[in-house]
Length: 149
View 1 (cartoon, rainbow, N blue to C red):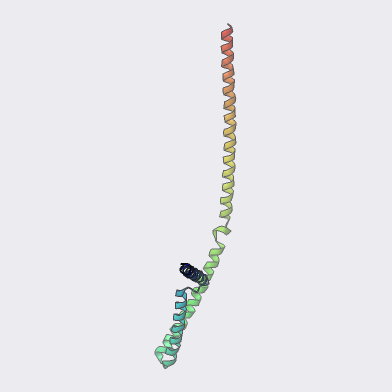
View 2: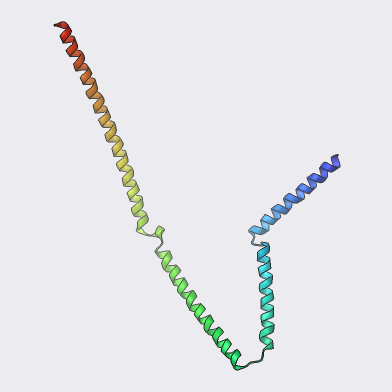
């Protein structure tokens, strides 16, 4: 019985360690799909070198090479434009603009207005209480006068 329990604990420990290691490698970007993509990239690079070395030079290959060079130039220009756009977007960012300050100031003003409203409500409530007490006193005085007469 004890050995069976020990085997179960041992299997559970191995299972937990496997999960811990898989999470560790997952967070280090050693995900199985990433490893497959890495191996695929290496395979494609190896086969493309062999293909380009085995094809003799001809006018079609030269045109293809020129097109590839042109495509690389266009890609570089596109990347430069994307970098410029990203720089402009980061400078126009909401958090860097005055709009955030305006919203913050508006919230402070609204908070102050709410506090003033509470103050005036409380003050009106006290005035109403004082008026109600005065009315009660006047009524009781009138009743006492009427009783005395």
